[in-house]
Length: 349
Image (cartoon, rainbow, N blue to C red):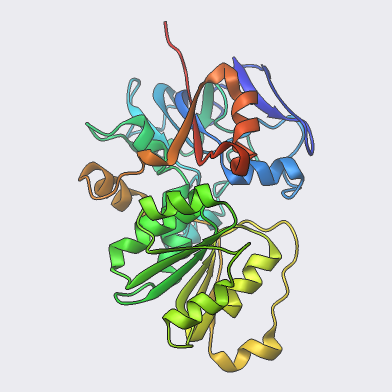
């Protein structure tokens, strides 16, 4: 088969590799029908995730068809159409029993495209397949479903739930990329008074408004803090979410929240950020971060299947699987290309 292989910082290639095989009785082999690229993949290529070894197949978001199951797999059958979750779960360790699958002690957590070969390939081995896949409901497209592998549960759990968004809140989201847009969609479930989105790219601010943001601020030409303070009577936002993953935007999220408010860091950081405790301790802030657990995925699937959420507009560019190099190039230059999410699909005879 062919796959997108990481060869160290800045180096990747679409190349022929051995087909995956069942290694444990709880594994399944899934033929990848639709796959996408995540901002985390770009962090890996920058060298921000040193645990990823050269030779690793990238990717952790896919929808596909089961082609083989291990002897201990009970809930899946060959031919099932499934979502491959970005987080794998053994299902029996202390953390999995508490729904904290991202911290799995039994060999799961974020492993696909990280510690084991991932989904940017024609086939993928999925460990703990019963616990790490979700069947695709009738009437839900690959376009909609693939967004539930990572970005929607990440934004919902790490942003909206940890940020404790409540009705009537002013929510400020820094970054209007896919994670920021997913945060808009899921924050709206809690009826905030206003959702404010801050970005440098006008195309992404336009997208944010289409996804439900009330106010878009171009931080290259506007004083975002002043705008937020004016709309909140000088208090600051009730909740700020950092959806970029650089130190400056984390510090902005802390600066723009009101006393007693919540700062939810969603972004993946590759460098240290300064926590100004000398200034913020007196504000009674709650600051959270974390890896997604995907405990919310069944809920989100139900909302998509029930037409309460529509994730498909996030896809701005489409490619065949053999066009991965072009897809990476376009996805890595969103200011120039207007890319939000790129979808790659397999052509079948």
